[in-house]
Length: 136
Image (cartoon, rainbow, N blue to C red; front, top):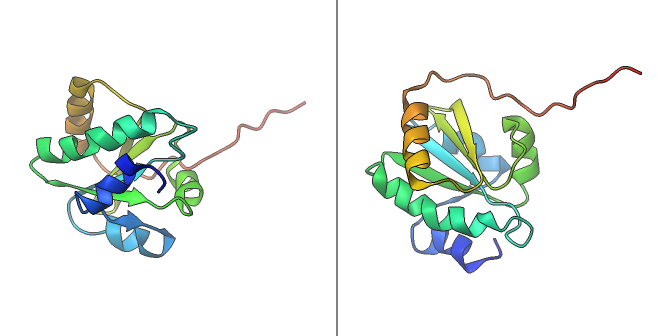
């Protein structure tokens, strides 16, 4: 990760970097997990904002939420799996099952409300990434 605010997640807060090899093990640990898809902070300016907010969200949920920072080399492959289109994104899972995604920066109250809703939702299949087919 190339920005000090993103690197701070791992160095100061102990958020592990998750790649393709350890993704499945990380998300299948019991409990609620959030994967941070940061993308390129030069391209997606909101990335650094989300990087600052993420530790606060973890604290607000009494550390009942585990975070992983998706490695740059795994982002595209995992983005296809989870099917979101906007960067940066936080993908929420429980016991390995998909709950939903929150993309871009939000107001604090929106984060709290949406995460609370996701924590009570049933797990489901990730939407995946599809390209609409249009006939001529």
